[in-house]
Amino acid sequence: MSEKPCNCPDLLSNISDYLDGTLPADLCAELEAHMRGCENCRVVVDTTSKTIYLYHTAGREVDVPQDARERLFSALKLDDLIPPKK
Ligand SMILES: [Zn+2]
Image (cartoon, rainbow, N blue to C red; front, side):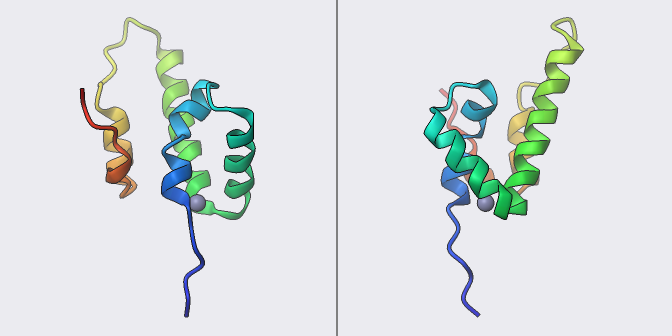
C-alpha cells in the first residue's frame, strides 16, 4: 500500500541543466540512475530532449513559442517545476 518514495521533482528540476550539459557529472549520474527505474522521469526527459532537439533542428528562423516548456511541464502535471518568471 505504501508508495515508494520518489524524488522526481528534485531530479526533474535539473532536466534543463542536464539537457544543456551544464549539470554536474554526479547529478547527471544520479538522474540517469533514477531514470532507469522511473518511467515517469524517462518520459519527461525524453520528451523534453526531443522538444529541445526540434528547436535546434528547426533553426532560428522559426518562431519558437517561448512557453513551450511550460506547456510541456503543465501537460505532464509538473507545473511546480516551472521556474518563476523574472
Ligand atoms: Zn522519477
